[in-house]
Structures are given as structure tokens and as C-alpha cells.
Amino acid sequence: MRVPWHRAFSAPGVLFAGLGFAALLAPFMTIAANRIVAGDGIRAWDMAPDYATWPGLAAVLVGLLLGLPERLALVRLGGAVQGLCGLVLLLSIGGPALLEGAGTNARVSPALGFWCLLGIFLLLVADALVRMAPGPPARAGLLALAVGALAAVLGSGVLSDLSVLQEYASRREAFLAAAWRHLGLAFGSLALAAVIGFPLGILCHRAANLRAATLPVLSFLQTIPSLAMFGLMIPVLSWVGRTVPGAEAAGIAGIGFAPAFLALVLYALLPIVGNTVAGLAATPPAAREAARGMGMTPGQRLWRVELPLGLPVILTGLRIVLVQNIGLAVIAGLIGGGGFGTFVFQGLNQTATDLILLGALPTVALALTAALFMDILVDLTRPAQEARHD
Amino acid sequence: MTAAALRVAMLAVLLALVIRPHWFEPVFAPLAPAGGPVIYDRASLLSLSLNHLGLVLAASVTATLVAVGLAVLVTRPAGAAFRPLARSVANMGQTFPPVAVLALAVPSLGFGSGPTLVALFLYGLLPILENAITGLTNLPRATMEAARGIGLSRGQRLMRVEIPLALPVILTGIRLSVVIALGTATIGSTVAARTLGEVIIAGLLTSNTALVLQGGLIVGLFAVLIHDAMLQIETRLLRGGRI
Image 1 (tube, rainbow over the protein chains, first blue to last red):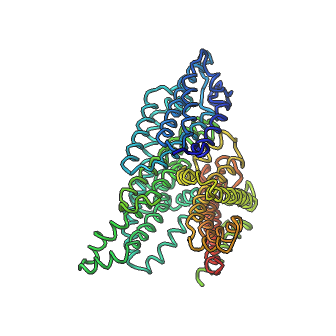
Image 2 (cartoon, rainbow over the protein chains, first blue to last red):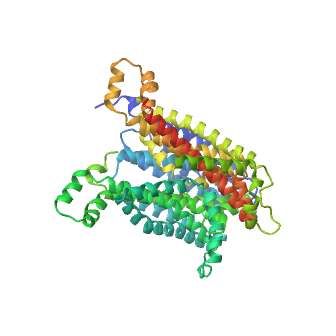
Image 3 (tube, rainbow over the protein chains, first blue to last red):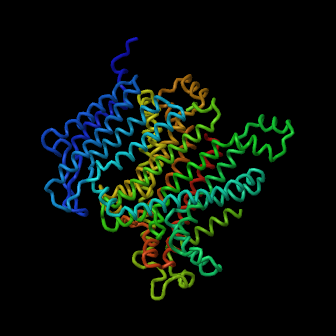
């Protein structure tokens, strides 16, 4: 069947192709005399002599054009991936070429054009994937591939000339320590909040008056701005550290890990308790009646009927907490709690952009990965007939 | 009754903390280090509060207008091709940590209120967009048919039927967005925006718990009271029978 010509093109694809061509005109990389001063922007084709940038440019341009056909989502996906490869290629050629003869302290970084094109290609990937609607296993595979590809690119050293990776190289150990601390804060507080929150949620589900007392308090806590919450934990925990015997020896003090951890636990409670209650309450009345008719005890009903049926909603609560915790753990950097926030705030103090990026980019990547992973998990636990209703 | 009394009490404490901070000197004095200020004295708390709320208001109003506009656009036939994309952008964009958005705005926009405003706007856009799209797509089919049947034009259907029906969901998005904006504006003082976060940061830098507590209390009370007020407006609107 013939398709009218204007229907043959994907509207987002046309928009992104236009934006992408415009972004190519913007500076693709900057070169600066050292890590603090502002750099000069260089366009992609001016970065290296002798046509060295042409393969990368071609990959980007063709990638944008492949985003156009409406019907061929797989082609659009392939085009976007090819475009991303082109961007990496351009960075890996532009970096050494710009640094040649530019002085020992010179730094090269990706500039506006690169970031815009990166955003555009990621949006093209997202748009193509929404059209293709892959199931949870396929999405898990794609996520693993994406994480693996990113690790391979970073590990291979082709981008090691970039300023942000030089910051990494000069503080590799601090970075790893911060990463572990960040993960410890985010996942540790999630675990503790789950240990408290699930039983509390189950109790709240059973007892209406407990529910009426608990949920408003938790939502009150959730409303308190993060910096205020982290700050308010300081006097509380320094008091605990001073007065409770043994607390100080256990590392509980006004600043550092403990107040950050506690603040994260408090923030995590509302989504966990709230979603546990909502998940358990969402059991269809028919299923509950049937379970009762079969002579199940309340305990059996909980474990065999209500929890399995409520699992997607409960896991959604965990997704909210995980993403939220990964982001909020950055604030720990302000109260000596470590994590990626240390670099962010150091960078802000020194106006060292690359140091800010060294803290912010892993946080963003971690939050995105966690969100995509948990989305897959939620869909896996959803009954088959519901899974595709979006 | 007790809830109302609690609200009035919190409001009174908040106003006193902001307008007459010196009344609280005896309360905070034990927490301040020897010789350190008990009450934040580098700027008036009132001006910081007004600045803070002004930033949030400006960002939230713009974010609401743009987000509802975009949601209307992608729920019309002409913009339908962008709806899945808008949805995934709104969904995935919210996983970006507010602090990271703020920090990433600095290299391109410099320090001060500018990057804070942009970060507040961008970040505030997403919950409203997500909720507005949900609200405008899940309209009862019978009502839409009836609106078409009585001869309302597209514009009339949008303004008189679709937006009013979607309003509760949109308001929830706005409330979420404002609460996040209040918190993000607090962190904005790490990039030199003049907000209440300044008081907390000053306390953290000089290990002065009095200032940390003071700033934390003011910001916390503002957030809780504003959240509560918006929730009240939502329930009134829902109960008012107009919807």
C-alpha cells in the first residue's frame, strides 16, 4: 500500500534531524589552557586536519537521516546507535588532535554541540524503542548491552584525553571510594527502609487507625527539603553520639555518614510504606473472597495472594526510592558523608567544571540505569494481560 | 480541629522565625559555637525567604504554562506523534537528580540565580507534563462524545471540558513540582543563589548547628505549609462539585 509522502516520515525524526544539523554548527569541543579557564569552542570539522573527522561526521549525519522513516523503527534505532558511535569517534579523534602542541596543562572537553547531539540520539533511541515496545527480557538485554558498551568505551581509553577523564585519572582512588560510599548510602538506606517499611506497610494495611496515623507523618517528612533534612539530622545525631553509650564508637556523629544515611531512610519510608499499603489494597475483591473461601488463614492470604498480586505496585515504590536515594545521596557531600556529591561541591567551590561533571555524570548514569532496571523488574512481575496496556 | 490548630501554630512559628528571629536567641544559643552568631546576620531572613519563594513562584508558573501547553499539543491529533516521546522524556527526565541538574547548569550559565531558575524550571516541568498528559488522555469517552454531540468546537472542548476534567491530576503535578522546586531552590545556594539554603550552608561551613537548625526549620515549615495549602485547594476543588 502506498503511504502519503508526509506520513512516511516520523515527525520526531524530522524535528531531531533539524535540531541535529543545527547542533553540528555549534562548537563540538572546547580547548582551554588549563582546567579552570573557559575554553575556545571548535566545530566538529575544524578539530583535526586531513579529513580525519569525516567518518565520524558522516556517521552522525547518516544517523540523523536514518531517524526519518516512520515505519522502520529498527532502522531508526540502528541510525541512532550509529550516530552515538559517530559521536564517540569524533571525540576520540578531536581530543588528541586539539591537544597536539597545545601545552601540557591544556584540557579538551566536549562542548554544547556534542551534548545536544548526544541528547538527540538518546531521544531517538527512546522514541524508536517506544514504537518497538520490546518485552522485559529484550529490554534487559538492551540495557546490559548499553551499560557494557559504555564501560567498554570508557575502559578502552579512546576518550582518555577528555578533561573529565583526566580528573578521574588524577583521583582514581578517591573516585572509587566515593562510588562505593554513594552506592552504600543509596542501597544501604533502601535496605534499612525496606526492613522497617514492609512490616509497617503490612500493619498499616491491616489496621486503619495505624494507617491514618502513619501515612501523614511520612508524607510530612517527604515534604521537607533535602538540604534542610540533612541539616536537621546533624544536631539530632550529634546529640545521640554524645549521650547514648557506645554510639560514638559505632561511628554515629553529627556529620558524616550517619546523618546522611538516616535522612535517606526517612525519605525512603513514604514510598515503601505507601506503595505496600496501596499494593496490598489493590487485590481484586474476588481473589480475596476466593482465598477466604478456600479456608486460607490471614497469613496465607497475605503471602500467597495479596503480596504476589501487589508486587508490581510495591516494586514501583522501591524504584521511586532507589532513584530518589541515588540523587539525594549527592547532598551527603555537603555534610561530609562522602559519595559523588563530594566532587560536585568541590567542583562548584573551585569553579572546576570537569570536577562537577565527574560527580554529576556518574550520578545521572546510575539513576537512569536504576530506573530502567527497576522498570523492567516491575513489568516482569506484572500479570501478562496487564503488561502491555500502556 | 487539631489539624487547623497545628497549622496555625506552625504558621505562627514560621512567621516569627522569619520576621523576629531574635526572639529565638535563647532557644538556639546552646547550639552555637562559642563566639559564633546565634542568629544568621549576613542577610535578613525575610529577604532570603522572599527571594526563595520568588524563584520558586517564577519557575513554577513558567513550568506550569509550558508543561500544560506541551501536554495540550501532544494530545491533539497534530502532535500525537510526539506523545510517546513526551511521556518517556517526562518519565526518564525525572530520574535526573535535581542537584545534578543544578550543578550541570552552572558550567553553561555561571553562578547565581540564573542557573537555579533554569534548573527549577526544567525540573519542575516534568511532573506537570507527565500528569497533564495523563489527565488529558484518560478522559471519560462518554463525556467527550457528549461534548462533541452538543456541537462544541475543538477549542471549546479543550477549555470547557478537557482542562476542567484533567485539572485535579494537573494540580497534583503542580504540587509535586512546587515541593521539589522549594527543595532544589534551597540547594541553589551552593551555586550562589540568594535563598534560604544560604543559612544552612553557612551553618555547615562554620559547624554552627544553630544556623543549620534555623535554616532547616524555616525551609521545612515553608515546604510543609505550602504543600498542605495546595492539597487543601485540590480537595476543595474536587469537593466543590464543579468538576
